[in-house]
Image: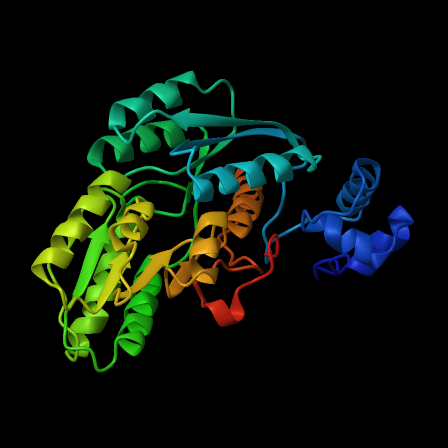
Length: 346
């Protein structure tokens, strides 16, 4: 008698038995983890496909054949973006479902440079993008999607686009987290809080700033000065902080929304009574600043996890998967000296 009931989905144990490998090896291979040879990774993927198991984040299927992907991103010389790009390259190189992966630098934040980079794309099937939220960029990405290329936004989203997925933290939540830790650090201080935004053209920066300011406004024991936009330039940040300290010697805290962070460190050098400092993104440099007491807290979005998930979501978008939450959601992490992760740890 025929049944309309769906076939039970293969398990990791089934794939291990079919491939002749351990369940631990199968789990690492399906989730793109290190410690699996290219041959064993291929054996796992072959067994998974033959058993009808779709390697996934949640219920996200993967393509049945190798595909071509790319990353378009500005500021590849900056530590956080560089680590995202490096992780994407590494994950793509060891994933048998990726035939090629291109890392394409955007020379600036201009919409023209994004369009030039899109025009230079050669036969890719999915692209991860870090870009400003402008009408021109939205149009460019929607045209790209219309041409059959899947788009995944990273770190900062774009409104009004047909992108398949966004990979990154909830930036409103990241800003609120920064606001709460700033309020706790500066409790009892009489001075105000200064906010330095990189570029409000990034939706993520707008959202962080909004979350931060809204949290502090809801708890008016600390006042917030008007935000200074610095275009992520360290020299501009240093000048702005120096001027602010001269005008407001009792400054209680500084919140840095984006890049240009080194300017804050330079402006505060030699000040034993420095304000508390909260910034984003754990990198080798910000780790050192935290360890040496030059800053107080980092709101991190885990560059390695963003890069890892970017590859998985691009593959899922190509496969035409339904929207499904990943098993590894990228959440904002509050990092203090006391819980500083070991170097290289996710």
